[in-house]
Length: 482
Image (cartoon, rainbow, N blue to C red; front, side):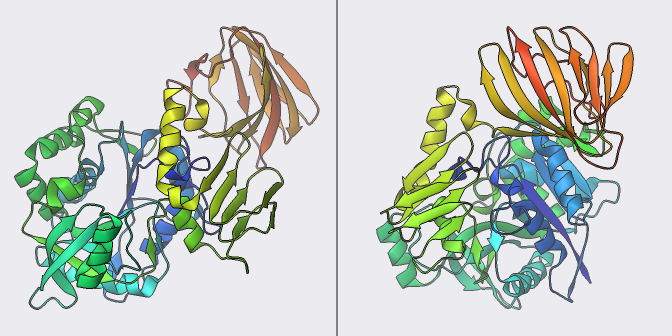
């Protein structure tokens, strides 16, 4: 029985779903369609593949190093420990990321160049799991025969937001598998309509299945510069806290390129399995509106929303009452620190807003008010000249680093749970409604030694309140910066 190794790529920023998705907490880590995040849905989809012909190995993940604890925690929360989590020091697109996973399988502790890799982005939706399983079975047979297989999605309309695959001839003795005649860039609406008429075009899903050795061989043939850089980075890798770190300097020497450009458009071994599996890359608010349940006016509503004389719209409130009146085919998305109002036809332009905010140095382009850390999270509640107020949660058994600040003092008040606080040489326990003052330059730590969550209110005061005013002396998560 063939063994499938799911390889999940979780490096995207999801900027087209701003303001909900942001660089520090992108869409794959959010629960957009169910009680599970998109990453968790992808892990479950892979590990619960309804097939009797294929066995499943533990998933391999490649992610941004800033998301490492969240990625592992979310996998464990749905009952699956990854076989490995590779941390990219910076994004270099999909070809280098997939090469890391291929090297792990083909040249790792149990080297197997014939290991089958099912490559999936962490932020896609697949609604028909039986159709997905059938397509994977067909692709696995072709991959074992030496092909690099991509999955083509049966078009539902003249979509201009996806690339396309033009199919060639059917491959002998491989039912459901066709050669790839051409990869086509995102077309204009007229060309997209023509593709539907011709009938031999499918959407490019960005999912792949091939053996680890075959991918590395083809990458070396067409992009030896990428393979050489990633191989050096992998050979010089290190590990800490269960994560695998490619050598940063070597990895950053790799050119940034997608698997489509680096390998799939060049190789003569490209094949496609076409399927109608209810797929979406959830790449815009319009696509999320199409996927969501609608009311009798065609509205998809999340949160405390009142919609009057409004139709065919995506309406989402995260923190307060939202009223929308007299609009059609719009997205209105509210978070605590930003609101987006847009025509759904302009869904691809959200990235331009994010780019403008980034150029202006606005924090809203990078992170939400709630910022996740390996020990829990904090969120800003208020700020003004020389003060800031935060709510901080420390999860059971976790603790912040032993640290000091040069420019600010802090006052902690326990509002939930029990805290163990270190200030200088003193260590003491605090109950609800008890507090402690931490002057500038005092080494301090907050710790939760109990099995319930700890929450405190932190009031900062000082001449500079930036998150980079942290000097760490001891940190269980081996971080060096904030």
